[in-house]
Image (cartoon, rainbow, N blue to C red; front, side):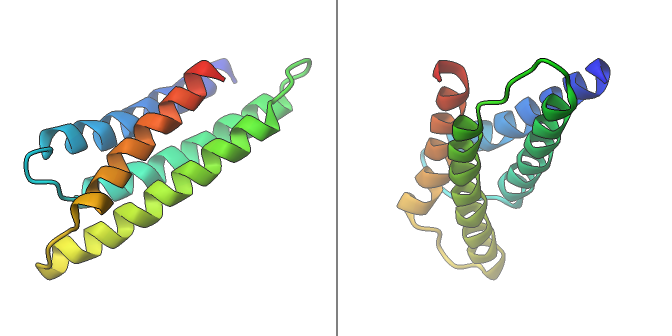
Length: 116
């Protein structure tokens, strides 16, 4: 079980790196890529699996408030990334605010994970 949790954590971090890395890379001309959307989906699935693994573990208390806040932030990131991805695929311009919402909220989500 320990290896599976570590694997989910690694994939979760990898998804976070894709979202923030792409955001930083496209900072001069903000846009949203399909990779950011799929990375948000990977983060969502791996995050939920990590909670399940921790709930199954004896003697480990999960902070449900923290998980709920992180889940809400991640859902907003996923929706914003989906909207931006659709606009990019249609050739429409992606608003700067939408592109920065995806990356900025991912950074906030990481900060919640570390500092809460």
